[in-house]
Length: 288
Length: 327
Image (cartoon, rainbow over all chains, first blue to last red; front, side, top):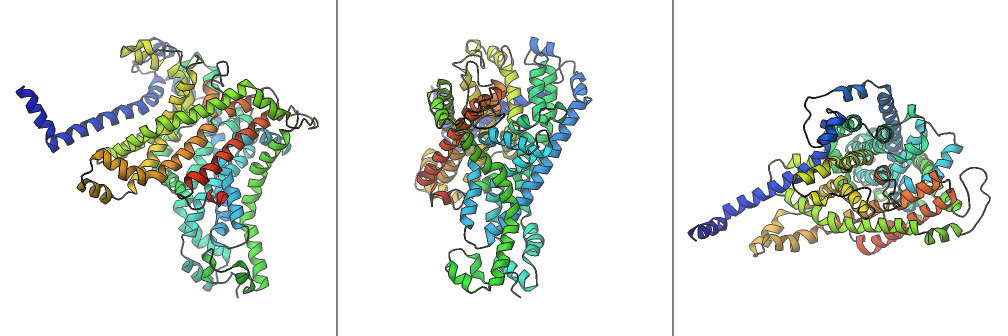
């Protein structure tokens, strides 16, 4: 009984209560972190095992560590072709959407003209339109334009569908840049385009970085459009390669894991490097 | 020398002065020049957008009125038959129901869990930055990679089953992706794994905008931790929660990649979404007219929802963006 009383008084002191709740918080946080990390570790570590080992013992560390799966993937031409294809498409899509988006956001933010809000609404309407809704006609259109099986056939629609979020992020940013700067530039004989290029673009760098990252990651991860547009395995992007690899080698789990691990590394590396920008951009976009 | 437009500051403050007032005070040449500039600036983006976004949507409406296999001429006009067929098709009805189930599950489970984690991370906590990074990581992985990983982990006797058996919960083991009664919930767990981090980040951003003084004042007035959360934090977090809910609902209506790779909408159509359904009908069965009708229905649902949400829920929260639709 004395024990129970002692326990109650101990839990009653504020310091003890704080320690207890702190311990609880850390436990929950660790469990949640494990739920996120275990699947990722499963992929990376599984790539160092053999399929036989994985089948016999799904939860285990590699012993011995086998590098054959990774070596096979890294030394296959297909993997690097897919990386190259993904890079080319993502670079084009990002370049187009950021340059076109910035150009369009400028008058939408700083000019006054009739129809401006209608135009802006037209662009924001695109936020509701994923490529999937337009997929069937888009495919027909790309066929008519002879863009099937080309990088442009993937990159240009991706850029077009990326315009809404780009403009929605850039417009308030460009609008917030003080009018005095523009007046000063005008007095110095700056043309409107010179103002845009020499003053607005450099000042908008944070927002431009954010939209670039969003566009790049979006294109890098895209699946449906490349799936429809590109049927030639030599031109596949990485997501197509991963999806196909996993259905082609259904029996060889370890190889799938190695391939998947290697293909998620660029995205994760990029993410660790750019987390702040992505997070900032997303919360910024949401605040409109 | 007004070639660059007037340095009239009013131009930068929308709503001040009527349009005719401004135009009459500007020389015609300057106005023309400004028009040309606007066209040059907006033209490329608008052309790209019209060609690859709006034109396909209009074409979808057009194709949806025809019986067409995607090849040859579009001649077999059948009016609204494709729509009638979609509404009567049990598989499509089920796909719509699956989407709405996922919407409901997201709101019911992801909101409290995400909020709880965000509140936890908002306290002084060692390793908070690292935890934030960890929770957010799945969001940047593609749905393809997420799907492949979980497909392997959920296969019979895979990691998930082995873990359950190891902690003596072997009785819970199911055919996660092959049982028609369970597959949708399995997919929901995977979706939550991938997208919960996004909600957490959003809520954290919202929480950090709430001044600490408010909760301190509540504490001084005698409010406990939970009371303070309920009466101070949650109301102030309202705008963030409403935006999150909007994005979660739209996202749940438009799911494709993950489902397509993990189940192809199966088994026996038990996990079809509207998009897997329309892609299947269009590209695997060459029913381009019918698939387009399904796409138009999906878009209509999204649009009606978005406008209603703007009008009744979000109106006060955000300036710009889609509020203009309702305005």
